[in-house]
Every structure is written in C-alpha cells, then in structure tokens.
Length: 312
Image (cartoon, rainbow, N blue to C red; front, top):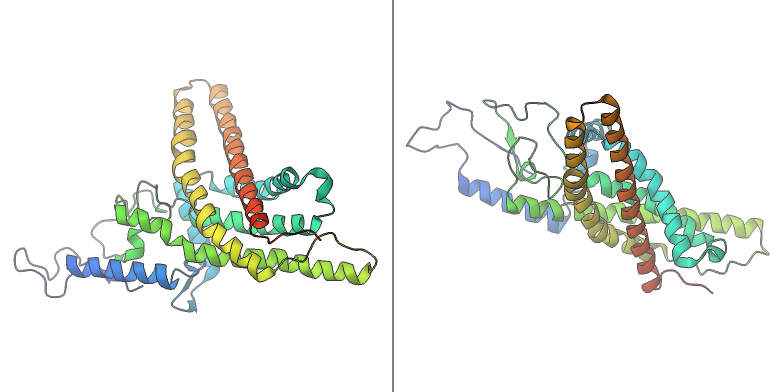
C-alpha cells in the first residue's frame, strides 16, 4: 500500500490558504478506500505479519519479532497464552476427535485423527497470532511533532475490538470492520498451508505404512488434500477469525484481565495477590480450552458434513 506522509508542524500549510502539497481529507479518504478494497478483494494483505510486502521479503524474522513485541505490549501474558494455545490445540483436537468418533474408533480412524491434530496446531495458533491485539512498543504511544507514515493499514487495528491503534488514536467504525475483513486472505492461505501439511504428511505416512505393512487394510478412505485444504482455509477465514476476534478482543480483556487486575490491586496482602494471579491463569486456561474444543468440534463436524472424511 502507498504510504501518505502527514505534513510536519510549521510546514508549507498556511492557516487559511490551504496546502499545495499537504494531505487533503478527500485524498486520504480515497487512499483508504482504494487501498483497503484492493487488499480485501485482491488478497494484498499477503504475509504482512511475516514481513512480505510488495512481493519482496523484507526481513521475516525481524518482522515477527516486532509483531511479537507489539502483541506483548497489548497483552503481557501473550507468550504464556501462545504456549498454552499450542498445547491446547493438540489436546482439544484429540478430545474432540474422541467425542465425535468414539474412543473405539480413534485407532481405526487414526489417519483422520493425526491429520486433524497437525492441522489444528498450525491453524489455531496462526489464527490467534493474526487477530491478537497490538499496542505501541513505547510506553508513551505515538510521539507528536514528528513525521510519521499514515497509510490505510495504520488505521485498521489487528483486532476489531481493541481500544486504540498503535499511534494511540481510537479506531473508526470502518477500521474495525476492516480488522475483521483484512485477515481473511492470509487466514485462508494459512489454512490451506496448514491442511496441506497435515493431510499431505499423513498421506505420505499412509504410503509408507502400506509399503511396510502391505497386509494392513485401512478402514478409512483417502482424504482429498486439495478439498481439505480449501475447507480448512475457509473455516479459518470465517469461524476461527470470529472466535479469536471475540476471545482476544472482548472475553479476555474485559471479562478476565480487567476484573482480576482490579482484584489484585485491591488485595493488600501479598499472598492474596498471588492467589488472584494463579486463579486468573486457571480461568484463562478453561476459557481457551472451551474455545479450542468448540473450534475442533465444529471443524470435524464440517469435514464429515461435506463428505471429506469417509469410511470404506
């Protein structure tokens, strides 16, 4: 996206004579609409969170580190939640597989179960990362009096419900709507990749098993990797997007973080504050466990409903 630079204070813009080369509201609005619609319809959002812009690899590792710091600034518990999310992604997917198929069918249908777990770990964590709240790395927010790049991406938060942008301003309604729409292309691609890895690797392992144990007959039919990839991409762009937007934008900050932070401030004794902190992590664990189980159950039900997982 083209970046429009705001004029410095005391620049060429006069008090009443306008500005010959400054930033006009009309051009700003047009640049917002053109850039945003182009990214949504054309998928230009790409792999921004991995540092890929304009078709060139900027610095993926540095971009990921910056993204992690911005997410940690908005949520100091982001690292712990990241580890928890990956553990829960595997465990909740397995639990959902058992609940949906029955414990006696897990081993006969291990092809589906293993692929589902691999896909869940990759897909769920990327969904969490992509729509997590972000905040400025500096404590004072955006510094005034300096020239900064103001593009349409800077006016769209990473989470639809986060209170402030990186520069400390309140997101507009259009920006909050874009925060839901912009992740869709990259979430779809991530879902395609996660499913291709999960079901593709499982397909390779099945071929190896067939070569090593030719007498073994699997009760499951081979899964179409392309169709499973498209389904997973669409699932992440819609269902996962909504779940993690609500979880990280409303449920955790307003119903968990804020109440428990107030309780820890009220508690005058050190042991009471420590107990409140531990109780907070228990609640976070239970909420994310429920979110993971819900996502896995819906995903498995959809795979069966669309005929992607069938028995012989």
